[in-house]
Each structure stands twice: as structure tokens, then as C-alpha cells.
Length: 209
Length: 209
Image (cartoon, rainbow over the protein chains, first blue to last red):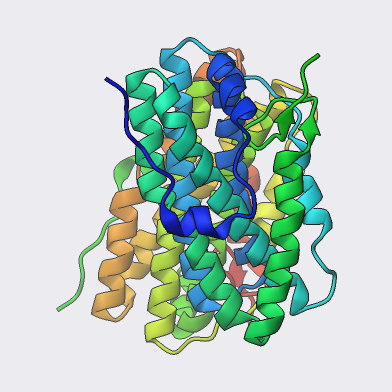
């Protein structure tokens, strides 16, 4: 029996590029590293959400939503850690992939552009994570695949929350927002599609020789 | 009708000094500032818990507990922010009290003493917070008092979790642990008892002229 999981239409149409098949093949073979990096990603996602609380403490609606989001990411972090523990995978520090760092390099320095970029980048990362949850789930052992399908269900709307805040919190007009979003999507698609010597949850196209 | 809330016996006997009556009198008169600083304290407590995840990522039991603790503190942060919102209290940045900073100055630099001190200080701060929740609750408007009584119920065991980890994670013998705990308790008691020109959730004895 194979798990049937599809990338939700809103996510598929949001992203500029699909995850390369070669990444999916490799991920299924390098499960311990994927889980390890995924645990780190959930923790970093929680920290990113908390960053909004510290940077924009007066924006109550944003703050409350980001706090709830951080809690959800932490719960997923705990779940991934538990799975690793059950599977006997030792936790270790690993270098982050180029992905989030290079996206963050694109964030502009001045407000409100900075907040806009931070929100749009978070939206894109969330959408990408969900696309990978959906695509990897059917290639995993059943129980783990079901876990990833559950994460997808739980996180599938996160990117839309970020987009909504980009619309409501930044005072930037819709066309400026859309054109910036498009620029960032193109940067992200390149990071996902170009050859990458490292394997991580958000790494690019495997370049194994 | 007055709310009846008592400082739990395990907390009362753990702390070296009781909160001065003068602080309680002042807190009831400076409610908006207390809530504001309390919201900040919940957020900082969450960040402190997450700090353990980043510093000691291999210690699975500690990591899982700290992540759950961070989620609980964040939920309380959201609740305090909601109450502030209902009461029309604007959020603003305020300087932290001397309390946590001066306790952190006492943390030793080398491991495992550093981890031991961080855990013991967290235990003491948690216990103090609960003592103040219990003592301030009967002096507040009923609904707010009930909220603080609820926080007390929910956080009353936190300090014991920290003490347990101090016992199990640091490889320090029991008498060394007890004597260090006692030193830190004395530092904390002084911060709570000595005159303080600022009013905060963890400030010392009010020194109003």
C-alpha cells in the first residue's frame, strides 16, 4: 500500500519551481540526515516567528499569530525529535544549508521593505517545506510518511498567513508586493533547482559525482 | 468576595525571602506596567527555554522538556497580551529590571557549572514568579486575579523540573548542587528585598520618595 499525498494546489501554484526528482530520490536514501536537518528547520522556524515578536512588539495581531505559529513549530520539532529517538538517530549539530541564509541576504535593510521581505521569505519557505512534505511522504516507510502527511495538513496554511500579513502590516501597495514576491520566488527557485553539493531539507539539486 | 490563593508550600520553603508587602501594594496600583512587564517576562522565559535547545541540542530529555516549557510560556504570553488588549493597554518596549540580568551575571563560564547555574537560576526565577502570582492574585480585580491563580496552577511545578535537570544533567554531586543553589538563592533574595527605584514584575522593594 502506498500513501497517496498530493501537493495542495495553492502551494503548487505558488512556487516557481518543483523539487527535483533527484532530491526526492536522495532524501529517501538519506533519511537520518533529512530528519536531523528537518528538526533543526522546525526549531529555526520557531525562532524566526519569535524574531517578529521581538522586532515588531507593538503589532498585536502579528505578534499573537507569530507566537501561536512558534508554538506549533516547536510541537513539530518535538515530534521529529521523538521519531529520531525511536529510530535511534543521534542528534548532532550540522551546518545549515545555503537556502535560508541566501534568502535572508535578499532582505532589504529599511522598513517597511524589511518587514515585507521577511514575511514574503517566510511564506516561500513555508510553502516549499509543505511541497517537500507532500512529495517525500509517499516514498517513506508508512508510519513516517503518515507523519509527514500530517505535518502537511497542519502547516499547509502557514504561507497564506505570512502573505496576509505582508498585505496588511507593511503599507505597501499590491503591485509592489506582487512584484517583490515574484523576485523572491525566482531567487528561491534557483536555490532549489541549482546543483548543490550538500544534502539538507532545503538543499538544491543533488550533485553527486 | 475575595479570591483565596496561597503560595504553595514547596515554593514558600524554596525561596529565601518573601516578596515585600510594599511591592504588592505598588503592583496593585501599577497594573498596566505590571502586565506589560509580565508579558515581556513570559516571552523571555520562552526564549530562555529555547536557549537550552540551542546550547545543549544533544540532551534529548532536556531539549524535549524545554521545548514544551517554551510553548507553555508562549501561550501565557499570548494570554497576557490578550488581557492587555481587552484593557486597552498599549504594548511598549520597557527596560528590563535588574533582576534577571544580575542573576545571569552570577552564571559561571565553564561547563558543567554553566549549565548547573543556568538551571538553578531558572528554577529560582520560576519559583519567584509563582510566589508573586499567588500573592498578587487576591489584590486584583476578580477576573484578572483568577487568571493569575490559573497561571500559578500551571507554572507551580516548573521550578521543580529545572531542579530535577540540575540533578540529572550536570554530573555535579548533591552537596555541591545544594551549596550553589543556596548561594544563588541568597543573591536572588537580595534583589527582591533591597530598595529598587524601578517597578517591574521582578523588581525589589519599592523606594518611592
